[in-house]
Image: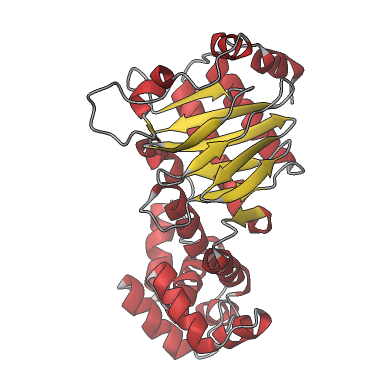
Length: 329
């Protein structure tokens, strides 16, 4: 990371000076709701850390002290710039190393062990509505994997409330994180637009590298769903429930029930969604015939593909192509 940023992030803050001078507990006035507010006693409050209506802010991770169990009423993610920090999330201990990312939704229960002077991390504090613009960048092609990851970060309490990315060797992610930190620290003009755009690019890279995701250790189901949705995204032409079940040592019936419980859909509907989305992309961006596109997305029966496409989009494939060619003129 840029040494100027590291130097800025390494400065001992007023809060840390108080800790080094003998304070043994976190200053609740910096994090928790004012007395009289009806909020859980262990909930870090957005009004304290995201002041003046901000949708996003950053602050260096406070060192030298144990931060007790708490939740947040906002989304948080931590980027490890240098050294390590140890977090206990929903009962699982995780040690972040340089370049790692840890995302927490509003339901995660977090505890943080004391960090040393050379352990430099940045906390991004984000109201969920900040992602409205960001997620539009990754919505041009339907992806169940994308939707699943986003729901883990910003949606209802699924009991699986964090995602952990080992991205230390992924240079584009490191560059984007440096851009985000620089933009926020140095108050760049249009910083909100820049940060939303950079965040969208960050999600695009992370979605393309699902092998780097480490979900909750207690969540076998979540880890399996991430693998299954990545399998559909890449193997949609020949993907089969039975093949994935066999690869992962699970029977078809159990896997089907798990998919329904985790996604609200069936394997068939998830696969069909991906195939239709890919067909639309090919119709808009290639000169392939409809028959060739049907075969390319996994349907040897072209008549069935035509019926399915019409049922999904209300037009036939050739009409869809003509409509989008006219829009692009």
